[in-house]
Image (tube, rainbow, N blue to C red; front, side, top):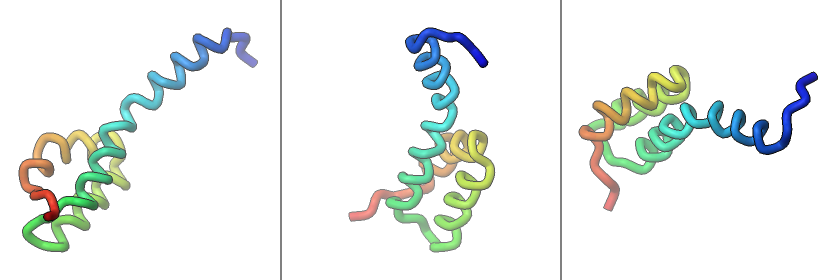
Amino acid sequence: MFDLPPSQLILIMALLALPILPNLWAIWHSFHADFTTHQEKMVWIAVCVFVPVLGGLAYLIWGRKRARRDQ
């Protein structure tokens, strides 16, 4: 199909995976963080899962400030 050298293929795959990384971090962080209610935690996880790139960015901007780390 495409005759790309392996180095270009790796670069393209890395660039395609880059927008997913904040979302994966947001899911991990919201799972391990403590929120004021359990429902708020579930909403943030659901937003990150069902609205992938935008949900992760929203969590980085607003959700991270609302979360407290578990002790």
